[in-house]
Image (cartoon, rainbow, N blue to C red; front, side, top):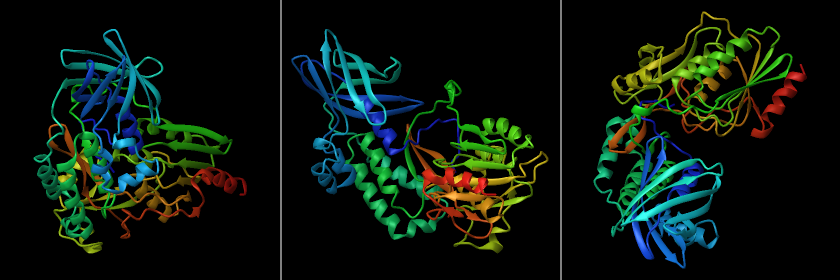
Amino acid sequence: MHNNTKMKFIGLSFGLIFGLIFLLNTSFAQNGTDRFKSEIDLGGGTVITTFLDFRLAENEFKMTSPKNADVRIMGGKARLGRVMGKAPKKGTIVTIKGTKQADSLIGQTAIPMFGKLGFKGIVKAGTLSGELVNNAGEAVGTVKGTSSKEERMNYSELYPKVINTIKENIYSKEVLQTGEWKKFEKKLEKLFHKSHDDIELFFGFSILSQKLPFTHLNFLITQDTSDNMGTEVPAKSVFFEEKDPETAYLQIKNFSTSADELTEILPKIVGNPAYKNLIIDLRNNGGGGIDAAFAFAKYIVAEDLEVGYFPTNKLAYSGYQPELFSKLPEMQPKTTDEFGNELKTTPGVKLVFKKPSNPVFTGKIYILTNGNTASTCEPIVYALKSDKRATIIGERTRGAMLSASPFVVSGKYLLMLPVGDFYTHDGVRLDKAGVAPDIEVKSEEALTKALELIQAK
């Protein structure tokens, strides 16, 4: 569960970030070999610093990021990946090829998940500038760089700031006493001293944090974009389809940008007396915030429904303590920001979905889940399952359920870290555990199974 703020950050998946970085690390130089310290603007405030070595021969250029990046990120085992063909040659993450045409550089590269993307740029007096475009000719990023003799970025001063930010704000000091945390801290220090650029730092942190006994600790590279918030039109997050005259199907892709769409669509479903069944598809929904979760529950929950407890580091607790947790104040936050700020400053809260005054869906509910159903989704799935309000079909959810908020560490470097722990109303901790379905089937078979159950009635 994430706290959305006016700083627009990008917590991108490994595949997506690799694609964008392959895309955007394109730069250029005059005849011979040169190195450019480059700022890659990915849009939305994300600006990545890297070094790009440029070679030109007979009007053909080749651009590569620092060598042995894979080893600095993953250690010696990365070399085995090269032998097996699963890691880039020489451990370079970025390779762009193209031709020099007059004063311009024209290149193209295959981008994972994106296909081929073009590059157009120019170099003058030891500086570079350019853009990358998709097949439609639309610019998807910019590059600015200057000739440099530097070998690597210096992150030595950033590391203690990162560690202190975590220690001051993590939901429980107990997790910092575990063997997993101590190993993480030691390896993280090495990463900050070895990384050559933002790319290595981002990937290395992401890989190391996955081995921790808790989730929602992410390293982000972004800048404040509060001045241009709202200039982008968000992609559609909710899809509705009538499977048959009595069955409505609703896919919710996230709980981050779906609040308005849910507020528009759900009343129409509830208001149609013909619908006796509602299939809610939460497969691959990675979660989001409170806003959309409440917009959803408002038309699904018929009575007060206890979600659970969110204790913080300002409460002295160890595991599930019902007598202690029951004293936490009940909260009905209007926004995700309000909820996050409450967790940053108090011992914690008890979250309850209150009985709504509006009509709710009274038919059969089927919820589809898989291993990518995470965060905000999981308390909802658990509550509706334990209350026997819905039948859960598919796979166990991811088990990534803590309440996280962003913290500026230094400049463009941020941490998204968990400030609130989570226990269900009956004491189950979902983080690193997930929610098991009532009917277990493969993710791709979940919808078919739900329709079979409906048709068999």
